[in-house]
Structure formats: structure tokens, C-alpha cells
Image: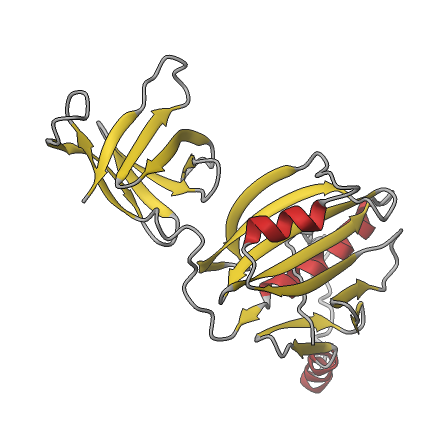
Length: 287
């Protein structure tokens, strides 16, 4: 059985509650539904939620009233509600291949990688699983976008591809987004092993004095990168950060904006302030 893909879409539908104004005298109150009817309604809604389990060790739940699952060259979660074009989540596992390799092959069209955006982040709400992400115009479906999520998993890569078509009506887009978000939030990985893609990065690095050749360390300045991609940069003050695996990006954990870039060479980490065009790399040594 192949793997399946999950993608988060950032739309959240807000529900507005309207109050009832009273007329002269006391306002009438709507009758509460009998407890038995309420329980039955909840049971009916729950009965539409189905859990799909893959032999590759992942599982996810979906609303069978809005989603159909097809097992073919991958596992497809197709949206079957009222919406334009193709809207689906697919998942496929690639053994013995790392995320960048899988992403490059998945996006390639006519031997070229098209224009795309790149990002990274936690996978399915788990702070112990990191994912590389890309987004590009679909080469197969008109007016659609392909979002790819590559998750290193136990020596291979789980590739998630989310295809969404532009919708003329916002309500349709929200409906698709809600269903896909529910699938992603329910995603589970069985026996997930620690990821190795960027295992050379985590550690504590202390600043090196002078030109970096003396080997003396300045304990006042340091960089701490943790395995969960959080960290602290201490120069004058402590700054909580998120570090990326590729392109050396360091983000402010509170604002989400990039503030530094880093390069690691052996046991040395070089840090640069991107806000200063004339800034030089500060050298730090692994402790």
C-alpha cells in the first residue's frame, strides 16, 4: 500500500452568533433539543469520520461525507463536495531518498524545476517532526496550486502533495480547506525515528575572539540550536529563534521574520545579521 499526503491550508472559518432582541415583556427562549436527539446527532456526525491506516506506518482520519479515498500509485484523498476543479491530497513514501531529492523530482517538468516558493516547519502539529515545503503552479491541473511537504521518515521521505483549485466562491475554498486541515491535524506516524537530515546542526556554539585564529572563546556570546529547531542567540540579549535546515535561515521565534543567516563548516558556525548590509560573519565554535 502506498503513502498519503497531508497539507495544511491556513483558512479558518469563524462562526458568528446572533442574539435575539426581546419585545415588550419577557423574551421567549427556544426550546432545547431533547438530550436523546442531541446525542444521536453527535453520533451520526461521528460515524462519518473514518480512519485510514497505511502499511507504511502512518494513519489519518477523514470525513467520508466529503472525502473519498483512492489507492492507486499513491493514496489520494479526493474532495467530493461542491467545488471547482481538482482538490486532493496524495501521499507516497520514497525509501532511501532524502527530502530535497524527492522534492526536486516531484516538481520537475520537462527536465526543469519551475518557479516555486520554499519554506520549512513542523509537520502536522508535531514539534518532533520537521518538514521541507515547496509551492508551485500545478503543471497538470488548470488554475490549481501544488503544495509539497517532504518529511524525512525512517531512512526515506514521505511526500505529501496538496492540489487545490482556485474557487470563485470563498465559501467553497473554506469548505475544502476545513476538510484538508482536519485530515492533517489527525495525521499520526507510527514508530517515527529521530530525523537525520540536519543532525549536524544542533549544539551550543561559543563566539571566538579576535580574528578567530586564537581559539579563545568569549562566553558572553553564544548560539544554541536545539534538535527541535528552536534555539537561542545570545549577543547583548537573548533572542528566541527557529532555525531552518536549508539556506541557513534563522527566524525570530516571536515575529517569524528572518533575522540572521548561518553557515556551518566543521565545528564552526558563522552567523550574519541580515539587517546590516556591511555586517561580517561572527564565528562561533562548537562546545
